[in-house]
Amino acid sequence: MAGRKKVKLAYIMNDASRKTSYNKRKNGFIKKMHEINILCDVPVCGIMYSPYESEPVVWPNLLETQRLITKFRSMPEAERNKKMVTHEMFLKQRIEKEQEKLNKLKKENREKQIRMLMNQCLTGRPLIGLDLNDLNDMECMIKECVTEIVAQIKSRKEENLAERNQPQVARTQVLAPSTDQNMHAAMETQMFDLNNMDAMQTAPWFVGDVSNQHFGYVDDQIPPL
Picture 1 (cartoon, rainbow, N blue to C red):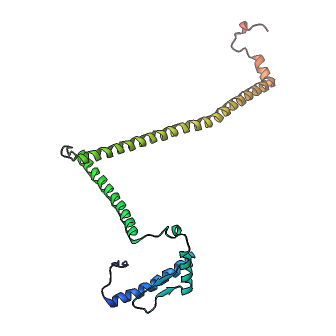
Picture 2 (cartoon, rainbow, N blue to C red):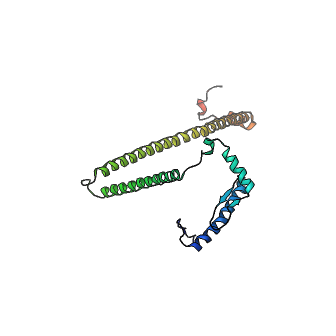
């Protein structure tokens, strides 16, 4: 879908076209005043003088328009003129804003130009013959890049150090209970062996076997009991 054609802001020389444009924009202007009054609850009034109508067009009505004008005139002059600008002041503000945009574009274009020169120098272009301003700007950009690289390296080192310290703490917390569990299991095993030994010694078959065994001694070498 094609966008609306941009209207050229200039005086319309043709009488019929000018009158048609006036009627269309007058209705649009009244519609906008009505919308801002309803949607934002802002008191609005408008007066339009036109050679195409015998009386001025007043919106919303004569009494409300007179009330708002009286209220406006009764305000202190400083308050009344706080947000008012003359045509000259309006143009000055617009020029300042456009100048800021222009300066920003100039800076961006200059940075792109210096980056292109740096890439050319890296691919073999000699520095001899470059303008002094180009060399100075290139030096400033290189310093900025080096500063950024150093900051990134420092940040990465701090992140790596934090990652190394964090697992050690976690490992200590995990191994401590496992060591206690191993000690507890060993103690249980020893208690189990002692209990088994007591049971074996009191068993009749164990006593009989022990009394009949020489445990490696020859018959004549058995020590007296």
